Image (tube, rainbow, N blue to C red; front, side):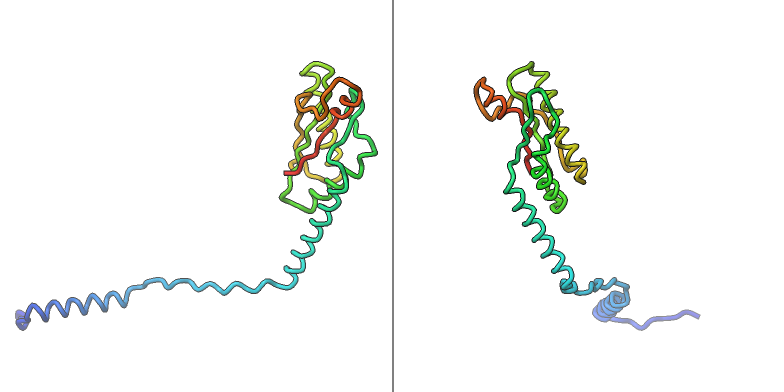
Length: 174
């Protein structure tokens, strides 16, 4: 027994096929766009914490402005004198409250001595300041010690006053 289909016009076949395609398209599983919850309004506690942090950073910045950003050393020495405690404290406190800040400590020497000796002395001065900062709780990766040796004098000349001005470590925030 054979089935016979009635003769259908081309138009009927095309419209039937199109209808089947539309139905097939409706039945397909197209993932719906994930609905994300609306962002919650900033909690008052977060606003208060951010405001407190901003005040803390501003206070630490104000303390920095009251100290000189250089530490001076005696001839051929690299020990940090107690008179620079306020400078160290101000910079350490600032680094503790501003997590983005970094410190570069540039050690310097006067013109006396060989270039190699002065580079080594400048490095020891910078490292001494870095160690003092570490004792105050500043992480080692927050303070970089570098030496300029005698290459960046603050004062020109060959007098005791010029030499004293050039025996220093400069603290530079980045």
